Image 1 (spheres, rainbow, N blue to C red):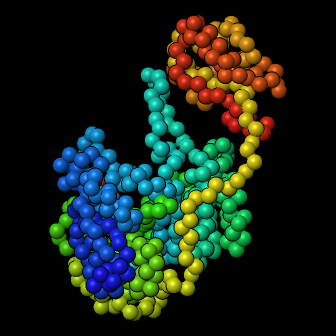
Image 2: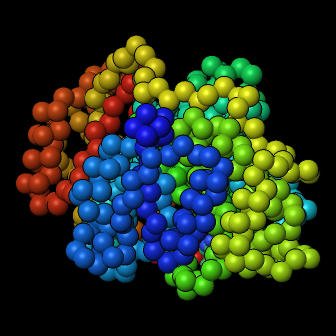
Image 3: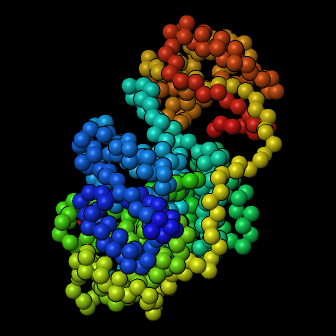
Length: 484
Ligand code: NAD
């Protein structure tokens, strides 16, 4: 018995809230019947745990199970409304460095009605950075800001993951969505890294799209995409759009991948109104579990489950959420749907493409290794000083600042809400109370010191101004590292 147990892969499972227990029971029944070798630790997370006073929805001892197994199959949970409560998904993402969110989106034409019959797209969303780093400030009475953080290590990890995923899953193309015509530095970095890493995968086709036109194309010709890699915010929005285009929200599974830890779930929530009615569709969680089986190397069981499920769909068997999208048969309950999948274990679909996870190379799960670059020369050439000021016009402010003399730094321009308003600026914009005053070195080639900036700040403060933030301006190997 002991030897038998050792062959099993330890995983942590939670049954979640709302429809969670019903769809997890259905999923586990199918996995058991398919012969999945799992050593299951069950933990309680979600609503009850939140309400018993744990603001992350998980008890400290449950983290021990997750640290041990490093694999989490999670049913949806309900996050109660209320201040101070933190999303369990966000906490798990941060705690375990789950940098990649992977969401396959398919349409099951002609068996499930859809306006887009040929969707077969995997969205790979960066999960840790971008505006989701959650770094926000209220700087003045009128102005709030959020920091869009895109790093080279974070981008290298997600882009490499996307290309490795494509290679390991027999995918032909990786598309990158960015907005680097506007965000030249942040999205520009994402684009640059995509080109650099993409060059290491010559057999995979690549293309890049400005996110707005790319999204429009995705909505109209989804079959022209294969794998898409995106920053966090674009990925959040577009993965929901494409999942919805492909069919019912109950049908999508997803994974969250880190260097050592991975979490698998359905894309939908806990649908509390359906709880206890035996009507929920277990497919999203089941397809999440299939991704988990691939991740832990049980690829033959993964294919067996996936193919039995595809055959079930082909046979017109469905749950209540699809009653208007499937013709012919009456919908089945959650349990009965699971039994129908079990009855088809060992069968292959006839029309839909059969899943095959065994003939493909295993996806590498190496720890991130930074691409080595010669360190660039970094020169301080100026500073943007942010002021909270509301006592006059742009010219009034400019004239006051021009009178402040500091070593090695001279006022070059003032902008408000991203538009230059001094010395020769737009006269037609509505100004807020936040002003960005750009100081540059007095002579090209002469570098600024931190003491120059401290001296200038002291003088600005002595003149009665409230500086709320500074942002140093650097050149990297002579290339400006700041927007114009
Ligand atoms: P939801 O996804 O739970 O439900 C949206 C709609 O889809 C509802 O009409 C529901 O009936 C239907 N639906 C969802 N899953 C279904 C399934 N498997 N079968 C049939 N119909 C299904 O979204 P919501 O109502 O916005 O959120 C409910 C709760 O879920 C909230 O507390 C939210 O915080 C939570 N939530 C959790 C997760 C997660 O745990 N990963 C994700 C999203 C939402």
